[in-house]
Structure formats: structure tokens, C-alpha cells
Length: 176
Ligand code: ADP
Image (tube, rainbow, N blue to C red; front, side, top):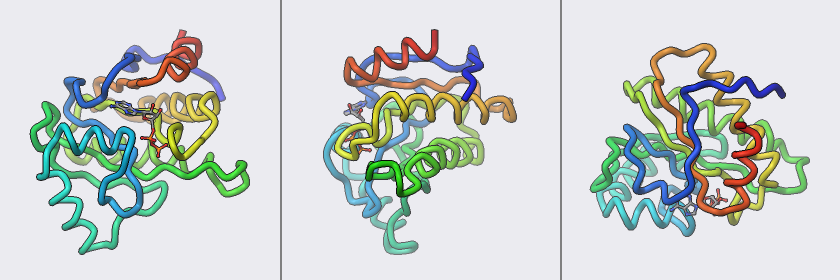
């Protein structure tokens, strides 16, 4: 993996629900019915409209598969959209986890482009209760986003939002 740094990539530490962007990405679970961690924070801050749209998507297509993404309103949040993607649960690395995590970033960016999103914020998908090793997850996230941006000129800003210190330190080092 090579880390070509792109000036459209930014790093911040904090709460993703507070970030001013067109779309924020949620590390959802496949039920789309909400959970803890960043998912809980997004639904709490955005209000019931988000869950209502998630339920509609669920009744149409039965939730969201690991590595896939869906888009809803952002409710009361400043963002226009929430892109819900389902990261893989870490299972020792023998269950296609790396491929699936890459897919989360790529599919989220594809959905963003389709919806004319210019700025997007990502949490550190799968690195909470799904236990994906943080350094490997960060390398995958940065690599996949950089590759996407090389082929795309419509996205103006991608922000990695780290909530915990450990992730923030890892990203700082990799993006230096
Ligand atoms: P997953 O199930 O994909 O592991 P989690 O929500 O448990 O999802 O964790 C994903 C990451 O989101 C973790 O690194 C956690 O520190 C981070 N996180 C938790 N709350 C927030 C928040 N409000 N804003 C941004 N990131 C958050």
C-alpha cells in the first residue's frame, strides 16, 4: 500500500455528528435498526427521521449487507445525508475482512458521488465493537480513499473523524 497524500483528505479528532459536511458515514449494522457506538450517536443526534428511512430500506431490501452502503436523510444533523455502511466483524483476518472494509469506503464514496455530495466524513469503521485492528483498518481506509480520489474529481473533501486517541495517533502518523 502506498500513501499518496491528497490535499482533499483531512483528519480531525472528535464527534462525527458535529462535523459540517454534506454527508456523514455511519458504521451501521446489517439490520439498519441502530446500535451503540457511532451508530447510536448519529441516531440520537439526528432524531427519528433517520431510523424511519432505515426501516423503509429494510422492508424493501432486508437491511444492508457487510461491505455495502445505503443513504438516508441526516434528520436534524447539519449534514444533508447519512451514508450507512456495514463494516466486517474482525474474525482473525480469515473471513475476507480486509476486502469487506475496503468495500465499505468505496461503496460509500460511490453513493456520495451519485448524490452530488462534495464533502464527506468517515468514522473509523469496524474499529469499535467489531474489533478490526486499528492500524490495519486505518491503512485500508486511507489507501482506498486515496485510490478513489485519484479517479474522481467531484469529491472536494474527505474527513477522517477519529473519536479515540489511539485511532487519532495512528491516522496522524499515516497521513503525515
Ligand atoms: P463498529 O461496530 O463498526 O466497530 P463502533 O461504533 O463500535 O462501530 O466503532 C467505530 C468507531 O467509531 C470507533 O473507533 C469509535 O471510537 C468511533 N466512535 C464512537 N462514537 C463516535 C462519534 N460520536 N463520532 C465519531 N466516531 C465515533
